[in-house]
Amino acid sequence: MISATVVTFLQRAVMQGIPLLYGSTGEILTEKSGNLNLGIPGIMYIGGISGVIGAFFYENSLANPNDANAFLAVIIPLLCSILGSALIGLLYCFLTVTLRANQNVTGLAITTFGVGFGNFFGGSLIKLTGADVPSVALTTTSNFFRQTLPIAETTGAFGKIFLSYGFLAYAAIIIALACSFFLNRTRGGLHLRAVGENPATADAAGISVTKSKYLATCIGSVIAGLGGLYYVMDYACGVWSNEGFGDRGWLAIALVIFAIWRPKLGILGSVVFGGLYIVYLFIPGLAMRTQELFKMLPYIVTIIVLILVSVKKKKENQGPQSLGLSYFREER
Image 1 (cartoon, rainbow, N blue to C red):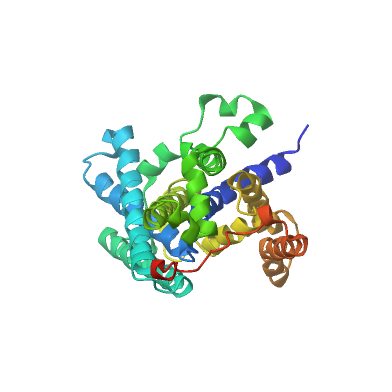
Image 2 (cartoon, rainbow, N blue to C red):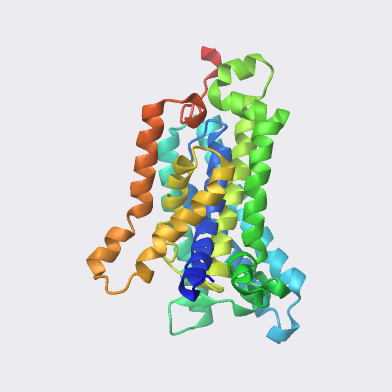
């Protein structure tokens, strides 16, 4: 029998890892096109706050919370999150692909902008509610997102570990598997990887480099934004607090390296990272300074993996050759 503590730890590790899986899957898809988007933390913020705004106005349009329609309560914040994330991904593409701005600087600027965007509108919503605490609670909407399978409570430890999550958790795994299949088993995935490896050669072969980068980055941004929506609506039970995301966006980027640019490995890696991130909570008697050391574990593991990958120098374990480089067609 698995102890209750182990079951709780695994359950929380999965919940902690799902936002990281969304972020890493979106970033892997983006990086396979040759774009290095360090704006993922900001995009996750924008995806989260966009969904919160949609849910806030929907809930406030109801005379009675019991009148909420399940479909509308889910689809409105979902579409708002997708739209907000796609727009910021489009902005990144316009700056880095069309205007050929430096990708590192652009990504960092988008992260700063995204966090500020989320905090500004989050603070505005808090003022509209007139709440005494600095947060917005969207309990009605969150309950629909957190709805679990009916058999989760009757199947013991198995149900708690594998069946006790909202639909966005399972969607994250499906999306990761779908991205893996697309990248490795389809012509479109082959074209995308060709663009990331050598855009000049891909261009000469008739592949649209600009179109590939735009599509991969915008879709990757949408996927990452859903991680922000999951965090607010499911993990945080519908409560938005400014600066509440912590460093999860950066952990998602670190997970890309840990998964060696393979979405399927990202599924396992997200659970590992989620467990490492919260393991200090399950070790009794730790001092505050020791807890902070434990929070460094995911980054330490990433550094170790990066060193091992660099030493082995296997091509299949490396990032795209043209990652982070702007493509100038006239220099072809």
